[in-house]
Image 1 (cartoon, helix red, strand yellow):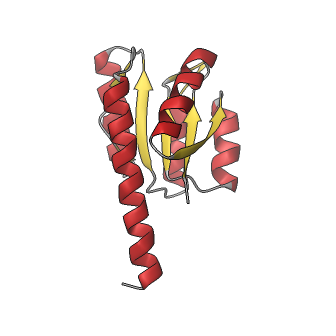
Image 2 (cartoon, helix red, strand yellow):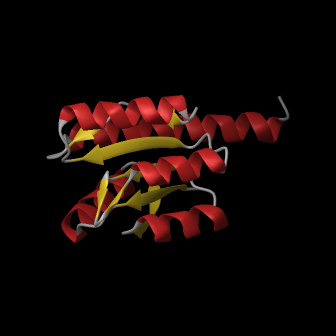
Image 3 (cartoon, one colour):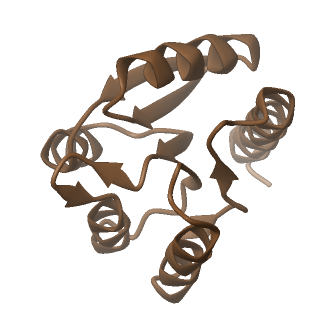
Length: 137
């Protein structure tokens, strides 16, 4: 069973790259390009991981972090953004404050090798958790 990744990214070229890397790491991807679209899909479906761009048109990706917190999500979140380093780490602090499962951020241009390895690790962890739940441990 493949894991499910939600990619929240408004630049088509970055969405395409993230889809390719995610597939290599064992994920099916769903892509959305706005805060509103992310909120809708997060309400309806479970994802094993979320990648989040901080700049989504006129709105901020931190709104998505707030939505994840409202849903009491424990889904791993990877912030991927061209924002300044201070903004990246401020978003991580917000996610931690909201008690989300935030990973260290990725600055654009993305280190694709590191992203692929991070996604593979998340997939392995998710698979392991699924096996434990299925075994009733």
